[in-house]
Image (cartoon, rainbow, N blue to C red; front, side):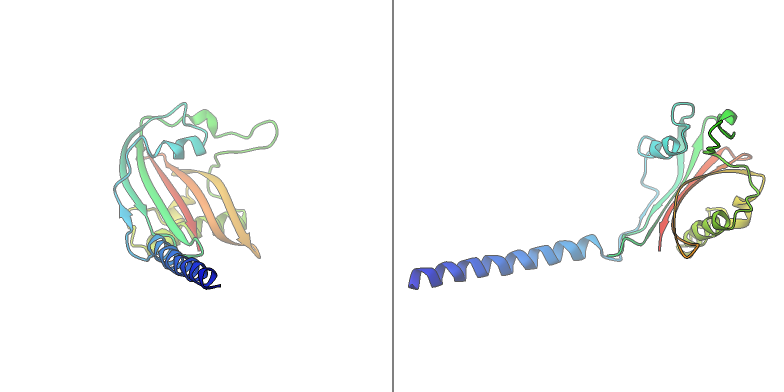
Length: 179
C-alpha cells in the first residue's frame, strides 16, 4: 500500500509539473508582445502570389514592408505585406467561363466585399501600418483586388484575406486579418 501511495504521489507531481510547463508554453505562444516587422524575405512571401494565382507569372523583387501581429488566444491577428513585383499578368483579370473571378476591378459594389475591404484596411491602420492603403484607395480603379477568403457573421466580415495590386506602383498588398 505504501508503494502505491508513493507511485501516485510521483504521478501527481509529474502531472503538476507538466501542467505548469504546458501553461507557460501557451502563455508564451499567445503573449501580446512580439509583433514582427519587416522581417520577411521575398522567398517567404511567394505564397501571396500563389494565392492570387499569379505565382508562376510574376516574381517578388523586394519585400517593402511586412508585419505580423502576435496571435491572441482566439486567433485574432493582422498580417500585412507590401511587395514589389516584376510584372502583373493582366490576363488574370477576367471572368472565366464558369463565372469564377480571381481578380476583380474596382469599384466594388457588393456590400460584403466592400465591408471586407474596410475591415482589412481598418485592422491594418489600427496597428499603425500607415503604408497600407485606405479602404477608399483599395476600392478605386487604381487597384485590382483578389479575395482569398472572407468569413462573416450576420453579413459582417470577421476574417479577411485580401490581395490588392496597385497598378501605379506595381506593388502587391496583402492583408490577413481576424478579429
